[in-house]
Image: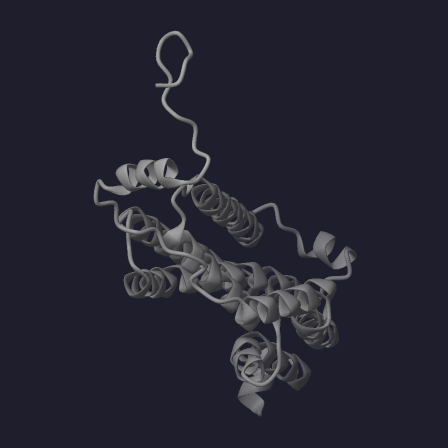
Length: 275
């Protein structure tokens, strides 16, 4: 206890930090466990993305899919760049010589201990750094998924199409999961920043961020829409269709079927008369 008080200044700061760590690191495992029993965005979006990969494999024109992948890459790059800027800003606030404890205290920030003050900023950097690593890994996995999508054969049967869609989903799904984890890091970075104003704001912000994320995962309008979308996709027979392997006889068979139809027009000569 004496060591905790010496390091943190008070047991309240230590208790608030424990609350934050439990909310930050425990949120995703709890959501994964809950998603096995009830519909949440985390699980429903997984079903939707896997259905997308099934359709992508059998889609003859993949420009639509490439545009969606490009949008995801742009979003990951934007958030990764924003994380770098925020990390540089917070690190600059720590190491700048112009930082005055008097001016900072005037903002309502707790400056009772210089070590604790630096620890509070350090917690914000740790949250942002973890999010940055999530975004970088998501970008790399998305590039792997793009390469896999480009390698899919043009013509596949039903069984082969299912195997290819499962393989691509195993690459693409963790990429999107890491992207979601990186975005979630902003919520807890804001909660960590609340520690600057004391242990009680940190505990309240941590619990509040967790409740907000949980509500958006299960009770928001987007969650209800994705839940309904998942139900529709589960009732839909996949794959929708498969493209038969082209054997060079397709056009010949089509012409034969057209000529054999009753009432088909007879060939005409140059004068327009039937022959």
